Length: 309
Image (cartoon, rainbow, N blue to C red):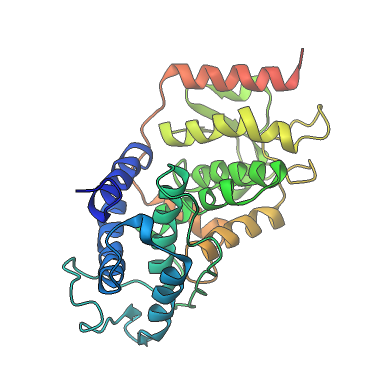
């Protein structure tokens, strides 16, 4: 079996998800979503991922647009004859979420050097559909957290890449660490705010709190401190941890915009706000604490940024 055939590439993608994402349901979700995509490609005579072209991706997108949508059931109703070779159970997702999963898979292959270019880069995302339900389940929230990774290599300027890495850390703090929007904006860079996998925050109209970081969140915050914040900062005396593109402390408008953009990229229903993502995080299991080493590394990075040599 070729290394570029569908099964080995899908397996490598699942292994990557298992190593980097704490949600066990993501692999099951991608497996169900990618099966019709592979069936569609096989029907066209494509037997490996290196044969996928932008025209194939656009054609699958067009099939999704033609699929009947039932607002009452709020589920995607597939025509069985359209993908006769799909054996995986189909999931009740909006068309935009199906196409988002395909784009993430192709982005992973391109990023890993399997594909010379991403055939989905120039194909527009599907618009999200407004649903009555406003909350997010675990699978939707975890898929939203993957959205900024699509922009890290697609965008060209260092400032845009830095903003994307900031967004990854911010979304993880909101959902996985359970920080409220006010608590997140109040986090300072000062070294004393970091200690052994916790971050200290003191919003102006709320009590001070220590927020426990999980391993995945700690890694994203560390990556932001190492490579993204130095690109965003314009005043070395700025104490806020998270900054806007013009070097100012992250404000409510920017926070709302980055959550909205990530939700749109992920094909989720409209109306996702930082508070909704935070509330979804409060309902998930408690995070695993990061060990002492990355926590101390974050403190050392913060101290170096405050007092550069």
